[in-house]
Length: 271
Image 1 (cartoon, rainbow, N blue to C red):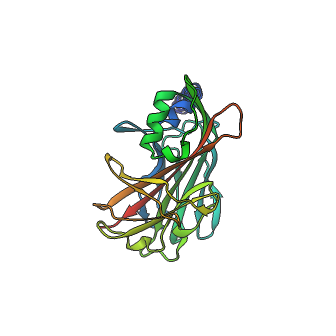
Image 2: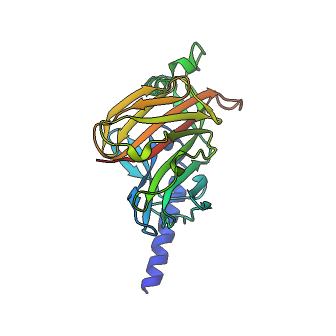
């Protein structure tokens, strides 16, 4: 009886996700999106729950795993890269057990989604993300602006005491990707930290990066990347932090005016 009820519950969750998935493409587009591991520093083989988080104004919500959500969801460890197995309805979206001492990177890439924003809201979104220069003087439709977008999210896990290697510095080939500087193990509150932003494997200059800490989303640090795609900054307290960036280009698809790429990186800052 217990097994049957569990199956019915999972089926109900799956149906809910599939139905809500019809509306999710537009919902996911308008807000910050990142991976939130249950722990960022752990012992080998300890469990880590990976939640997919979306921010709505000043609160967060988790996105359960649903069919068609991910184009890529994997873990890159010192031993290689393996797909993360998730089932429809999983929330958190996955539970993993990294075993090799060193740095591991969880990577998530969404399936491309479409959104139609009212022109006024589109302008506000562009301003908020610091993309006015990308739009320039391009005329916008009077009614709605059709857009296609993709999410590229990463989270860095440190496995073992004083993890060996520089796996955190590895580029994973994401179209828009944030990568830590080589000094990540020394990142502490109120000390320098370095990130670089890459678009199609090349440093991306002049892009606005947002730094925020989960639970303190309104207290953001905003900086623009330099000529080598580099950001050099400090954060005021230890704990989990997220860096996020958006890049936009004219769409090659005649059905959409613009194509945007959203990158996020979740990392830990020590005391």
